Amino acid sequence: MDFNYGRFARLFSTLALLCFSVSNVVAGDVVSLKAQDIFATVNGEVISTAEFHAFLMEGAQQRFYHGKTTSKEQTAFREEMGQKIVDRVLLLQEAQKRNIVVKEISIEKGGQQHVAHLKEDAVLDRLRVVVGERVSANEQEVEAYYSSNPEKFTRPEQIRVSLILLAVPPYATPATWQDRMTEAEAIAKKIEAGEPFSSLAIQYSDHQSSKAGGDLGFVHSGMLTPEVEQLIKGLSVGENAAPIYLLQGVAMFRLVERVAAKLNSYNNVASRARDLLLRERRDQAWSALLVQLRATANIHME
Image 1 (cartoon, helix red, strand yellow):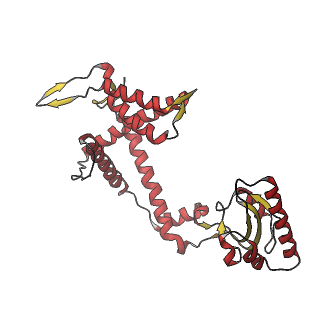
Image 2 (image 1 turned 45 degrees about the vertical axis):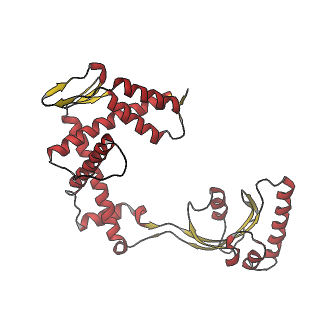
Image 3 (image 1 turned 90 degrees about the vertical axis):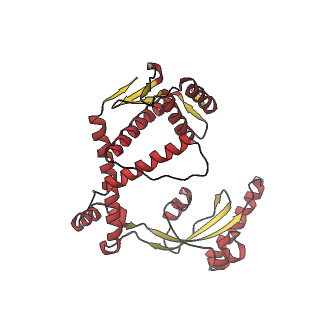
């Protein structure tokens, strides 16, 4: 079943207003929350239903920008956001234990609640830095990482390609497309007869590369459409492909040069290898902290 995001958003906004009842301590007086107003308690700290719905709304606006989601996706998303808000509280509690604070932050717009949220984000960012500061890697470990992950340090295969494009407007008739294909086939015969591809590109191509004789320079996987990549993959250096239809018109490609993939030497990428290894270890340390906090926490979901 498709779920309308507009209704989704309005529903959660209404729920947030209806359920808003926040636990406060004012001059020593505790304002209690009713059971139905509590989403969860984390080590005795209450997450209200209103807080969770606001958190859910913010996440939904970012995730479901297309406007629709199925009931299954909605349920999974709610569970995911429930875990995230609990984790956020656990991490903020850990930051408090470590006496991590941030100075005042200045923003041009936003209410008190928005500022408080930004302060929490800053505290969590600082906690992540502190956790990561304990991570290290010696030279032997960096070299081992380089050896174990050659794909991260390999320059991908590069191909140098030239193009002749006979442009066709998107509103053109089938007859126009056929006329352009006929023109392309005539150009292909001129190439077969020995006329330079580059000269013909300058003369006939509607692509911006025509001034350079159709030279597109070096490209690597992902820069061309899958159809064109597959076409060029079967060419030998110096070989021309038969004209094909593309969205932009009728195209002819020539493979000018092919440079094989090459593993960069350790000396050339040692700094990058260290950075990547440390980044992975920082992420692992952060994940390990979360696992530890969850395992030792007293969490009760209402």
